[in-house]
Length: 235
Ligand code: UDP
Image 1 (cartoon, rainbow, N blue to C red):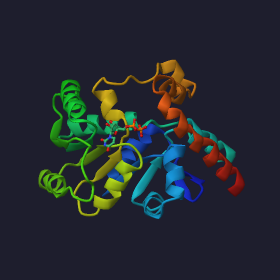
Image 2: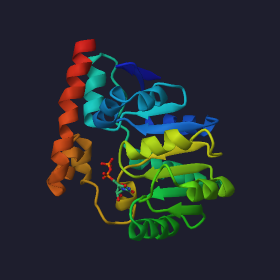
Image 3: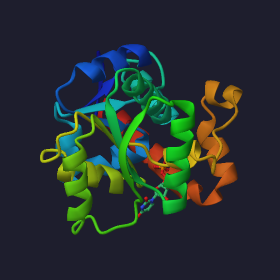
Image 4: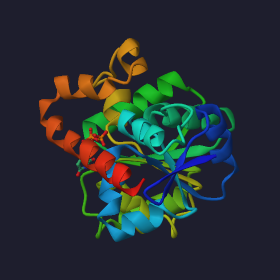
């Protein structure tokens, strides 16, 4: 089930159906489709080619994407937060003894993130991890390590579009089945940043909470109206 938005197919079914679908895929890139990422894709051919291909599932992760789906009269069933999808994938990997690998964030953050994940899921097999501060063009040691460990899922938290570029560049040569860019999620799991209170998430104001906490994010909101205008124009 999907919503057609600016030549993208946005996943429009529920989160629980999404998780089942992910585990059926041979190889898949889960894209957290907020307006900023989708707008970046419209202006970058390599991103667009991957996002619009059957290698990717774009989830409606952002109130702007949900509004856009209503504008084109193909509303998605629910907003799906990337961090919740990551948590579900990790939980299932722990239950079924599938290994995971984490790339991204600072050294201190990723180490704390690994500890917290192990605390939450004692059975979880974290096959390896690396911080997110390295040259993507010269990271053979990291790529070789991922190949050797052969994790089922690879989570990359380096912010958009850095993480998507990394995934797209290496997805074909890596043996992982699930690739997912998860933005600031490692900071969240490590307890460095808090998610908005539930009531704010429920009424679609998580973005407001993040901007209030980290005002430098405000300039990134400009992609929301640009994205929506493009959606309206193409309608
Ligand atoms: N980061 C990284 N490498 C870089 C730049 C950033 O690993 O070269 C990390 C940063 O430490 C943080 C995450 O990427 O953990 C960025 O998260 P942000 O909140 O910007 O992502 P968003 O959720 O907004 O996409």
